[in-house]
Image 1 (tube, rainbow, N blue to C red):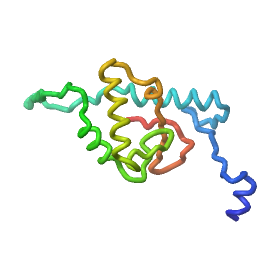
Image 2 (image 1 turned 60 degrees about the horizontal axis):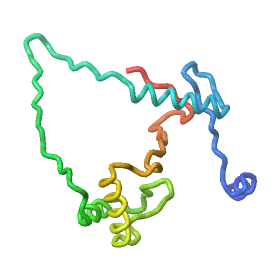
Image 3 (image 1 turned 90 degrees about the horizontal axis):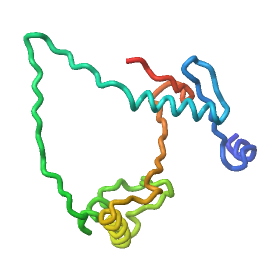
Image 4 (image 1 turned 90 degrees about the vertical axis):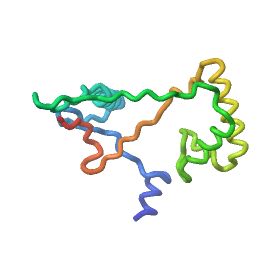
Length: 149
């Protein structure tokens, strides 16, 4: 069965891109799907902060702790330590480059890039890209409706 599926799909199983919109309707055109995901993430990222329950007898106090943040240029040892903490076998970037394959080379190159960005206060345009993958814990992966709180 696997061989037959692979042959029919030219080596790679095709995945459905259809999603369910807010009204429960299945949408499949590229524009509708993209619009639904955009709407979904706007809802998720623009939620109001939940109200903290309190009684009249009980006052909520918040202790503000201000810590000193290092604002100096990253050092080689800091970059190396950060690369060392990356998980093995996990791609950290869109292009699947594994920085830990040659940690000395990666440390030097990443440090050069970070130092340049630090000095000129400008990031590479490619750093504006990101991949968001919905990982459903249960239920239908096509269901993009937000849960009401």
